[in-house]
Image 1: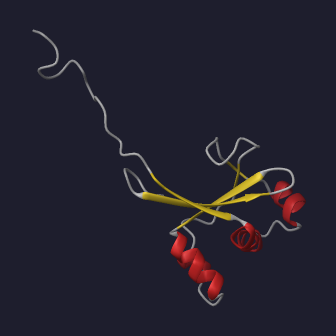
Image 2 (image 1 turned 90 degrees about the vertical axis):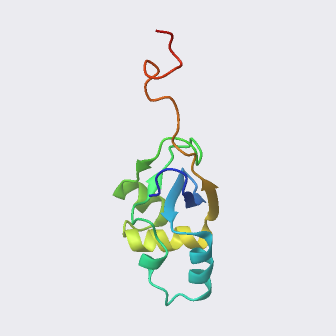
Length: 114
């Protein structure tokens, strides 16, 4: 996962009961994988974990999807098979993560009268 102001790319799959999210390296990697399935998933994925949104959308709190949830939605609990189904039927979303800046300690410096 990128930290700071790096790009973040995910694939969102809207299932019958919930939405599922996986994180990928880039939209181009997904596009290349769809054209050439011989590309290993390790070169596409940013992590091999499937998340579910509990119907809160792609911006909500993400929890790891349970084996039972994956079995009910995709017919299998095998992570690789689920990831392939999400890559095939999901929507790629890329965004820039906001840089982490802000006041670290307001009592220091010239902003406080002495």
